[in-house]
Length: 591
Image (cartoon, rainbow, N blue to C red; front, side, top):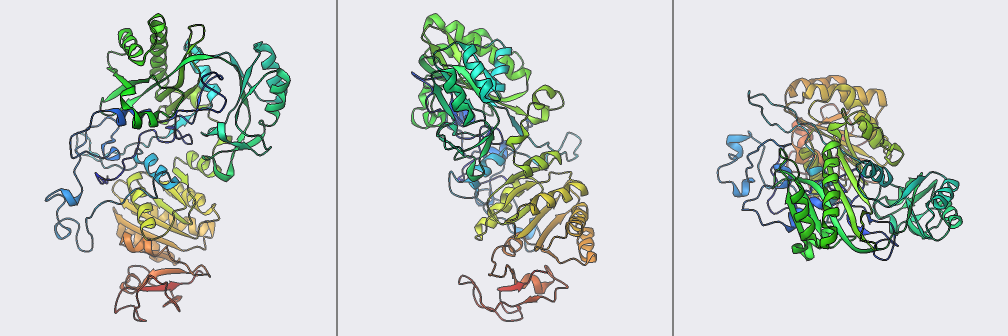
């Protein structure tokens, strides 16, 4: 696994709410919170980052987060070449001619961009990691995908666990919303759109309604407002122009909290186990609190063997600032939340805000729970709750094929094995001025069928103009990938250029399969040049390819449509027509 750059921004565990969609965490919904309504924050996610931000500085050099990720297995981190002395050896001794060792690529895109968020989000996901067991055999680490549930589902789980929550019910039609509001008997009720995306409080429905969280003052108004939410798409900063369909709303009583707190349970690497995180500043973005006032965040590590003790919860509640008369009540809720965390194999439980109500009651006003998909075989009740209508169709298909896919906004499709290599591939595409169309990790044990399905996913995106396949065959066999590529190109009648870079197990067999297929698949041994082959296009959608690779026999061997370009891009130096004199570009016309 690529160790990473100590100076680069490390990926955060549980990014985007730890789930598939939600990001940003902790911010109070519009119309909710203090003097407001039943609960919440938009998005919800960053207790892990908050824990790290508020913790003591680690000793240098520090291993990046994605280098330290190992599903509990101890790992020895080695710094990159620029700081590692004689490790790894120089190219002549280590990797053979033509390979070089340099500083690792950065996460794609500027801070806050979707590429950067994907980089952080995928930094925690392991594909073919290359760890070894006690017998010296290489083992494959399972990829981790976190399941995220709707708010009302999470609240139901809290209620089953005996945690104090506001009264409320889900409504799937305006008439149901009217009935629920009337049944609650509260003067004011809160209507909360149920979509798997953060920022709903500031979102806009296609009906024109502003905000996905509304306070209403009568059952009739509840019906009118919910009719503008249910069945309509909600557009937020996180959903983008596609939006997310709202199929139901949560109708709950309005409460008037005196004080708001933040509480979360997550897995903390530095503690090597679960940790309780609390703050006196709830209802806001916890990451902002960690950055601006880290002393406001307190933590209580839990021994995974001994479990949580009541005195630990009491101690945390006292540090969070709960009044003495309700410390026990707050601690009891914390213990119940921890038991829920263990029972359902959760990776994170976040309550923002946990409040002291006007009558002295401790309530959990909003809940965000993420579940480890590796536990799906024993948490069928939970995983049956997944709302596929909230998923991108391609990501839904990827999940069924056990592929790790994230759609992006570029036009260069990527098919890679291993999350680290996939990030590096996207980085090098960005480095040369291109934009990846997706993150697609086929893992360390992909079959021919999975490779074919991967190509179906990539080509279903009409923006894709070329495909870059980058495979390192450790556990993965390159010939299996090659079979899948050839089958996919034939079955799907793919017309866009495909560049394949294969290294490792049975690579010669793989190259022979590609050559014998007679298909115009461009093979290249060098990742840097393979990336360049996809990047520059003229107005006829022709691919610009590095000439030296072509004439070395490294890329195209039987292509009559390889020729020098009439006009080079402004940032490319001149070259001879035959490509042998110096580095340059040639044009590969599409079939």
